[in-house]
Length: 176
Image (tube, rainbow, N blue to C red; front, side, top):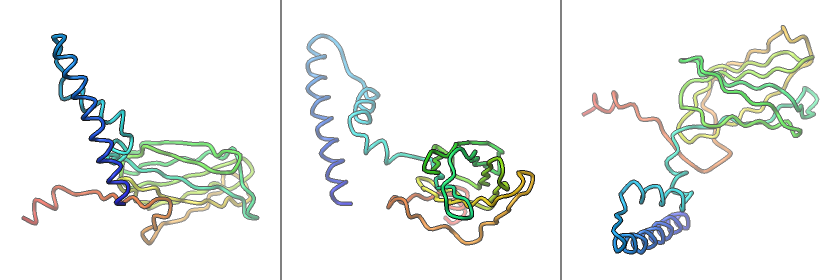
């Protein structure tokens, strides 16, 4: 963690030095550089800074059959249950899927492939900067049949060491 903070600080100083040098050159030529330009330069030159400001989450995992064989070509859909917004992905040759840039909130995950029962997992809660891993096991059967899984306990973050939290501004105002 300390190494990343040092990298971010070093990157920010390097960007500032470049901006000051460029700004002085531009000011001599009769141009001025604005705060927005500095922000754009900082974010574009320091990707770690931009990543630290992420307000979305990711749902990812692997889809396998009941024997443990990976399943490519599975349609996976994350549905935000409050808005019915849908984001989808298709598993690759390793059976892996990634659905990124999801706003935090409650979700339902659906997975389907011809010749298998549809998989549905409800009650998922996606937090800011969370990588929610949901591995799916599809059972052989008719697509019209559905295997429904209801999430109970909070899921453990195993994909990254990042921590994010949704802050309810209404609750924090009430506690003052």
